[in-house]
Image (cartoon, rainbow, N blue to C red; front, side):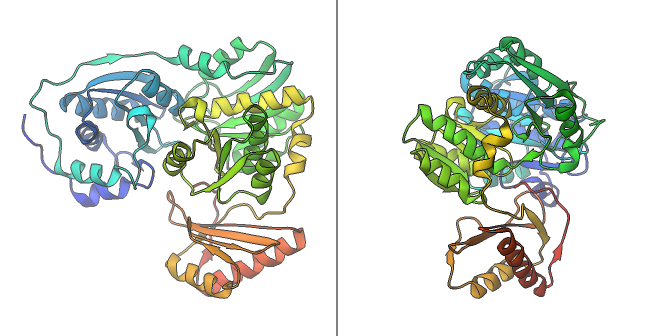
Length: 465
């Protein structure tokens, strides 16, 4: 079979992002494009065996089938993992010793969106720095058959093995009641299996049935609107805490026993302290938007804290370079060396349950020492020329500690901020923290005023990458 017609570049280019591939179905990402991506993916990494998983979105089965068809045409044997979470797909790649894998998902985005997360051996992701630009060029050229025969297609089921692996991280099995909102996403099938293996922990389940129509709310734990019902349920049930998952279950957000949301960076500090007890002196990564309290907690516990760029591809690579045991992002992604340097929402649930059970104290009390500095939270800004804004801010705060690891970070002894381009939305994201509430409010208005002078506009958003 010869080369197929090229895909117009204006149709393909926009769906390739910094970390993955995302687009509206079927206008931007459709079955024909998915088939070419599967074909190019196998050829790019010279794969013999690839595993494909998908979430519950209404378009995911069709896109996964098309991707697998293209991969088989390129000569790879393709294992169909079915409807799975992204962490389970990553587990399948490295435990099944596949040459790579693809997860069809748009994570927390609305149901009319879909996408692909691609990884090579050992679940090492392709990204804008590593592989995606070349893959995009190959997709434009079209699908090509190898001289060898097309690969075989078969099914594989690793759900029980995966959940057993995660359950093996449970340490403190004192009784707990945990309210869990799977958001009709891919955490749903995993929750009952997990709790059946840890009988002392009792779930209060919400929306475990996978449903790509998202009949109750979008599966985005960063959005306060999506966790209101869970917050009420935690209080009504007298639960020890609550956990909310995104659509593909690689992120997890937490609600304390009072029904209050817990900041994601503070969860990084909490888990870091816990893991450092068993791994003294270990390295922990934290994304550069995190509170100063996080690195202080890491160092107080005898660990080595390393700042990182935002984004799973960058963090996973840096974890390997540094030999880090754990990493956390403000977006609610938490990464574990024990799970192949991948992010895992289900394991994060286990970690927080371990801590609450072992300490015998409420989650709010455990978080309080970390909640030391008032912060703005992530503010989204519509920016026509981000570089002009960054330059203006750097000039205004020229006497500060400035760094450009990811966007611009401006640091003073008693306050700091980071402003960076989003890799998933047409905005920049501002995070600011200070030693006192009054200073935080003062500097927030000051920095926003400087940005508005450049003609930029504040836009609503829930944060992320």
